[in-house]
Image: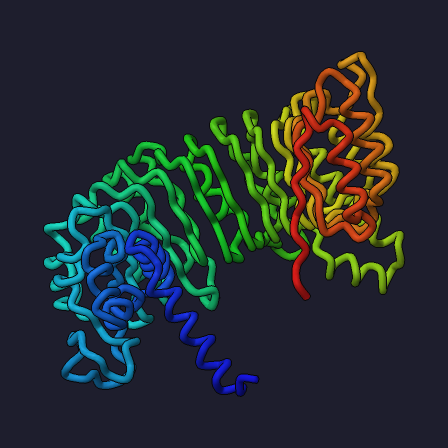
Length: 471
């Protein structure tokens, strides 16, 4: 019988053999993904072995992410800061940018600027821009990780002249900025007016400003706003500039209103976004945001963590089940009002940890005749909803969501296997059946139920099972 040491060594030998047997093309793809998430990834891979070094140096995509660190060094750097030799610590070394750019070949470049709370000296910025200047035609995306909003604003003013081919900008500012006026990127629209190729913008910890009347409306198609607490008027000003917006993602955004004495200032007027087709709301002031938006052509509505479990648990402790129902009913009412006011006919509805009472959800779906995709995740839908939704008549005008094609039921603890089977049997006895069912992590739905579901309509229905999460 082999000793534990022998077994361990044999296991290590087997692991090494597997890594040696990987084809160069697969290794290159691994290195590309490594470099996407780790600024030292390309450099470290080149120091592992001669084979890895050959693969890394022959794949220009591994070097397409340029990390520009303008933060002051934490400690005095070694004189051999750019030497590619085996030393104890590969991480945290400043790399020669000209060599990095040379290794990137002719691929598209993705820049990540890292700037501290203290502005870098002018010569450092100029030196960096001089090195980057010959490669500006290859810049496609720029990320600004800045500890102070005005610094990001100043960098943005420089970038519009040095990166005319940008398609996406990602601005990341810390959440510790206190005053709302310090969150506004004053130069944003002026910069984007000159960078006509930018169609996508992400602001984390900052907001777009009110657009200058001398500028044309922004040509942005995708806007992501994250991690901001701001006044509702500032939020509205930024959105008003985006008349061509097609997709809007709002995550962890809290909006405040202002009182003068005991008088509440009325909310700002509604922002019309005529081209918006997708709206994603996550862990935010959804009622204020939905009251602010007019989106007549919205087709996909995604709600995530708008009725979180901890809120429902607190209500259960303080007010009992009546309080839980009141919270879900309030969200359902806000959602129904938004859909009704905008006259929406949704194609896709996604509710993740955003539960609505069964009767309210049925009423909501009854008004959406063209809904094709329904996703219910971490939802407390139960028997009343499934029975009402399963009702099938040959008259298409009487059915709920008559053209529904796919439904996702994931982590729905009140659903039983019998409810789901009866629902599918009823819906798929019509000329317009459900063609895709994704189900899993429902406590009362087991493997036997899944097997039965696969036999209900095998020619037209595809059943996808969500794998369980290992505890």
